[in-house]
Length: 257
Image 1 (cartoon, one colour):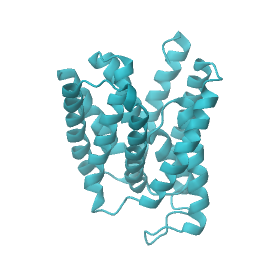
Image 2 (cartoon, helix red, strand yellow):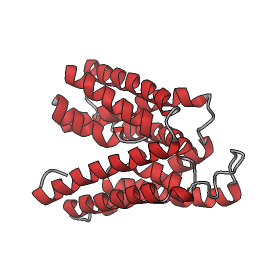
Image 3 (cartoon, helix red, strand yellow):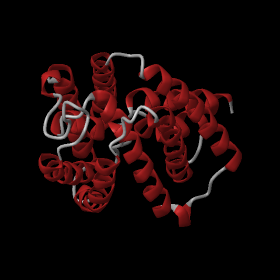
Image 4 (cartoon, helix red, strand yellow):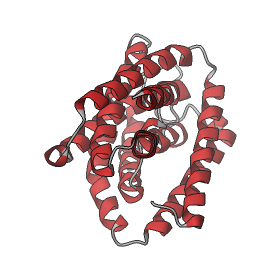
């Protein structure tokens, strides 16, 4: 139980601070850190990530950082595209998929470190609004691409959504993180619904894990507002590099995918 509380706080902090990290770490944390069987870890992680992402939204609501329409577009278009990505995934060697995922993360991390001058594109107007004439087609295209990649690589969340928001749509990092959390809530709810019939949750463990994640996400959400956007962007890139390195090591040593 202590391990569940500690890991839950860590996942909540990653979600609240960076808008990502929780979804890609929740299943390994539950399986290897807490000892939950993989069949139960997947739906449990969706509950934990979904509720902690929702909690992380609370400090950002009054700040007006969330672009709800963009989040809805990503949620709807990405859901359909994810099925196509999952179909392609079943045709490929798992190690090839993992290697491709790691390379994608490295490319995104490099762009996050070197592409700060691209912020403020079609979607983000100087006065804080959204230019829908330029943003709508980009949002649909990016939502389809991210949804397909999410289904293809079996992971997603903020690791794909935040770079897409920043690099493709030109949203500021703070807005990208906040909007990513909204998308994660939508995706987690849809994913849990898909696993609902096969979900066998340990209610006490799930509540403890989720409660700790909520605490971490709320604390991190308050801290994130005081951290410069460029620093958040760099932290996110470094976290992406760490996870990409771990994935590549698993590919080389032939570990589980």
